[in-house]
Image (cartoon, rainbow over all chains, first blue to last red; front, side):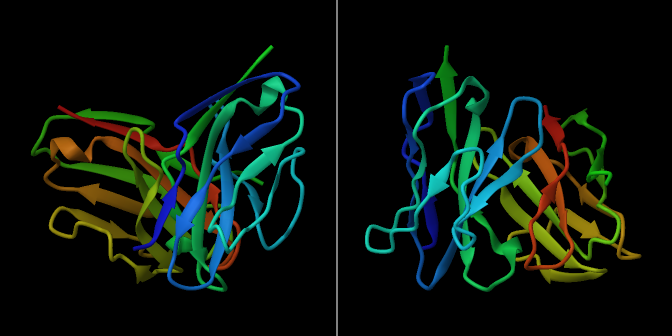
Length: 111
Length: 113
């Protein structure tokens, strides 16, 4: 079955601490992985996708096919990073409409 | 550019009533998506349009949900009759094409009592 698992519903860290939001997936094929973010009172928006290999707002994520993981990391958390984060996948090269989302992790960065 | 617009933002109805949601995508975007997001879950795709044609409606409960995008621009999603379990946020998103980044609207929060 195709599935995205985000094991933490809530992650709380202090400002300046490292952050890692976990994402594991199950997919029979070659996946494309994404991280979406929703800040308070804002719309859901794309944060990054694994094929672009970009660092957005200091966040990075590496696709580990052996461990079927796509964890989101940032070395020094900022208060403005507090938000809801969703990991998602689709078939590599396929329509992005077939996105399968995880349940999300709420990140809270304390001052 | 203007973002994806949705209306209404909130709707409360009783079970067995009908409801309709409207979405206006970003101008020029060929692909339009409707998602259902139940509290505590990630968004789940209900239906995907490419221009005015349906690409994927495999997860749309067709006995009560319907959607259309007649002129390949605006879209409406209807529920008739509503059930308690339809309480959710309904998100509309659009992209310039099927392989491009999706832009989400603010969503419509539906409460069925």
